[in-house]
Length: 301
Image 1 (cartoon, rainbow, N blue to C red):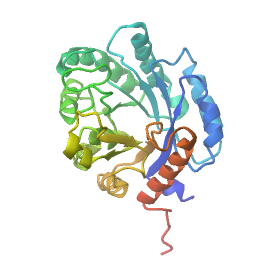
Image 2 (image 1 turned 135 degrees about the vertical axis):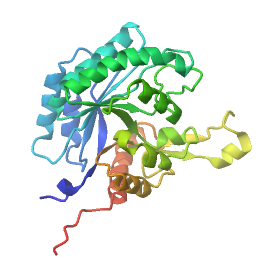
Image 3 (image 1 turned 60 degrees about the horizontal axis):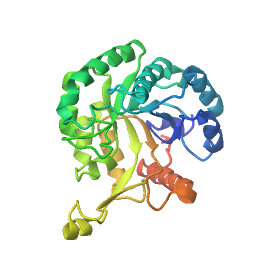
Image 4 (image 1 turned 120 degrees about the vertical axis):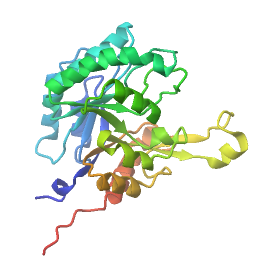
């Protein structure tokens, strides 16, 4: 057995699948040390044959010890514009075809009734997600909601209601199914000055997938200018460049008995982006592997 196969927690990255080039991208970076990939769609699958795409992604991986545990479908499936309806259909297609990727989880936003208080989305949430939960159960798939506010809050927003632990209580009450949970990351909590570590201890059994994304909080800016001034008080970061102690995060996950993939979500770091994007991602990959404990060692005893 290889060292990687003994890791209960894998470190990987996200791969855009919206334009149909996910398999090609996997082929490009599969030998860089990633242990998992999360193909994801933004609002629409663009009419792709999802089963065929899944097969091509697995063919691109080949015999490498790399997994795809989770497929992403990000958009607003609660509203009814043409693009929102494509998002809803994308959720159905991803749930039905997750097994072609080897995935057992589909992740994304809950959706939201736009520009209304969060609680006014709950009836529509229950209607849509009760049906999708049954569909997921029939396919042996779990559903994970990312905890990103997309600049929304309790009073208003466009995309997602699952961005706050108080909201998690509400949505899990509406859909108590055990296979509905969270795609969690510390970044989105830190952006709203919520301490992320205690959430693992409370919500670990509901965390189905983890995104590798961090944040840097500029406390000096907060003390001088507050959080509503002209100076940014927080930046989203690639792991290894932000404030999170990933050794503590992974330790808490292990203590809770968690296993799965931490897939790096890039494209947000204000410094390690564009020409430095892959430099930042590989740094994050190695940083998270070290935080996981480094190379797996078999005790010869």
